[in-house]
Picture 1 (cartoon, rainbow, N blue to C red):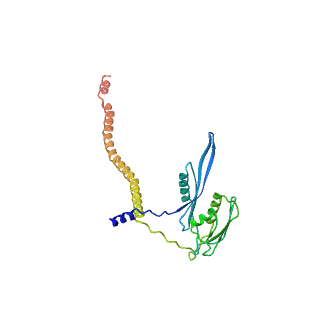
Picture 2 (tube, rainbow, N blue to C red):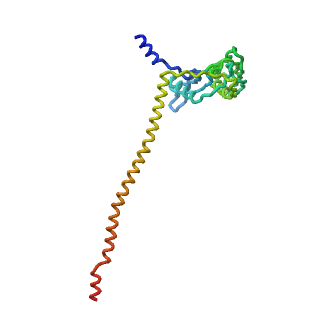
Picture 3 (tube, rainbow, N blue to C red):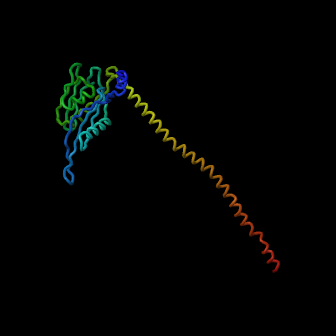
Length: 246
């Protein structure tokens, strides 16, 4: 019994998420409408896989959970790749200004840690940067500093292959393999369904082509009858009789 339960538990193991989610800020936002004020929640969320990919998204909704979901979907669309060296740091110094924010990010030796604060610290953690020095010289607004940090990481130059850090790809579970096989089957079925109407149309055209000659054959005897009817009045005898009387 115990072995059976273990076997079932392995099948129902929770899959590891591809990206880690970090809620940076949740604000109450009001919009003035004709009837009064409309209250909503704005969620700023950062996602990352700690292997060089990070994204930032902002979502608004009447409920906090739906706002976070919207922000996550937007962050997935706006993913960027961050170049990371073998010493788990950025390749060069970055000094960037975005709106009222001003960020300075400097690479550090191994063992230094992430010396940063606020939204920048969380974004660097999600990107997989472990050693870095930074300083915020401008605005302390969470949303603007988060956007500035993404812009700073996006402006980094790529690293050489010899200096770049290589991340191990996670092994797929049996459940993920089954899902991949199901998705491929669904795609094959969709492509087959798209091709079927074309074959049906071609079949209809062939049937019409077969029917058309029959209609022409029916039309031919009618045309012959009309021609005969036109020719008959020319060979009438009464005309000859009138001439003889005269």
